[in-house]
Amino acid sequence: MSSPNLSTTLCGVKLANPTILPAGFLGTTKNILKRVADNGAGAVTIKSISIEEREGHQNPTVLLFEAGMLNAVGYSNPGAKEAAKEFSDLSNIGAPVIASIIGQKDDDFLRVIDEFGDSLQPSQKCGETNSSAFSAVEIPLSCPHTPGFGTLGGQSSPEATARIVSFVKKNVKLPLFVKLSPNVPDIGELAKIAEDSGADGITAVNTMGPGMVINIDARKPVLDFKMGGVSGPALRPIAVRCVYDIYKSVKIPIIGTGGVSTGREAVEMLMAGASAVGIGTAIYSRGIEVFQKVNDEIASWMNESGYNNIAELIGAAHD
Picture 1 (spheres, rainbow, N blue to C red):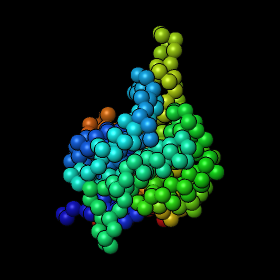
Picture 2: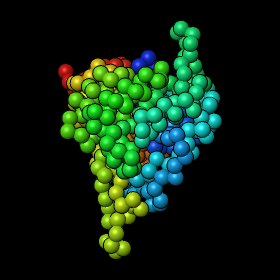
Picture 3: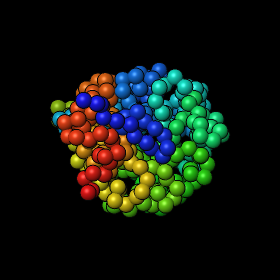
Picture 4: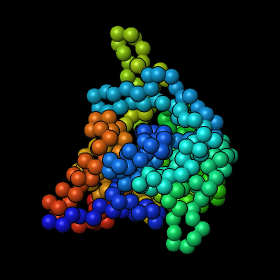
């Protein structure tokens, strides 16, 4: 039996398979990105980068609970100058690399873009791509646990989304993905606003909440920041519904992220309308090999179900 074609395309960027490492998981160095790609990821995303170095929240910042994970890392990162050095040549990664950039003010995004310089510029030769540079840019406007950013910074409102997306799009030539929060009244409408403002794709979704777990013996919340974003299995049904709603509202591709840990769950996300699938929390439960495991499970299910390529699955639940 021939193997099904797992390749997919995001805004002209070809992925060997639909699995993606999302921002916030492991993407701190080139060596780790290469390790993730070697373990089967179709694309990888770096940890979100701000203009200045950030320590983030104090430990504990991550907590596993019975239905998933809470995290309140707080965007810890070395700052744009150091990150630009680390990610200056991406030619040996073996998969497309997505840059994740953050800012509190609109100009902060531009300052990060300027600091990264040529690594955020596509090849000038027609029909060629720059393998040493990033393949796309993602801006998360949706973090639920970092003051000044995302939902705590008012960036997930329709007005802020339109303003920030429009501003960033004018200053970056690579495909631009906007990462949305599930904690909005109408995520389909918000995705359409992002599309109309220049977004080339949508990443859906960021963690939900924030949520809280209390240590009843210590009589206080477990996380140092007290609350954190909810990911893992608890998020998956919400994420699937969000992707389904977005697919009905926009024509641009969607990276479906939230709680996927198996091939069947990845297929579910694709059928909801995603063109690729982010896998993050499942790294903790299935190891860094989760990407290859999920790809093998997708291929096995496709063979059993009579599908030949990923394109047949995208949006199939809408038929």
